[in-house]
Length: 282
Image (cartoon, rainbow, N blue to C red; front, side, top):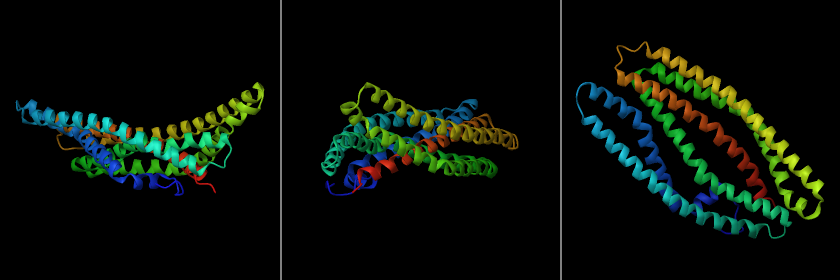
């Protein structure tokens, strides 16, 4: 990636596509195994109740594979994303040589957030997407109404986030602008100036946090209604086994956990959108 190229998530991925592809494949494998655990546990419960052990052995194999893949991915991620941070940091500084030190310092830290997203935020996003898809498929295998309930809750949650999106973009831009002033504050203003700066940082962070809290409160209500709906729908199944009941309840709860990851990631993308504009400003 040349120092004159646009610095963005897409450019970073393309510039290191082979290394990043390996970690994405490991993430997908890890999360597919994780998403299938409740189903295999449900099968194992039914098998044990019939004094059979084949499904328990399969579950043990899945758990072993999950541990191996998860450990391997974390060892690999730390090394390849560390190298990418160094490269992106050098490219960012090359683009900003004419800028004040305050701006260069802040944006150098911001450039690391692009790589942090790929290492720390993207895997949970893939986890959420895989978990949601697996949940829809498994619930549909028990009853189409269970899957429709999940799909409706997911669409309503994304609609709610869309209403908050512009607020997140605006609040993240104000926070980043204040961060860029920090070096100038430390180097040229009296202690009272630093106090004012820190108070402004706090005010922007509080406003952002309050907006996140409002979003989560609304999303939680939607998802709790979904869980209660699926519990009621489960009672309509024809003589469900203990393993089936366990699977339906577990996947419904995991749908909630996965769905809550989406607003986190979308809020992070709102922040990265502002950072992208700053790093590539003429």
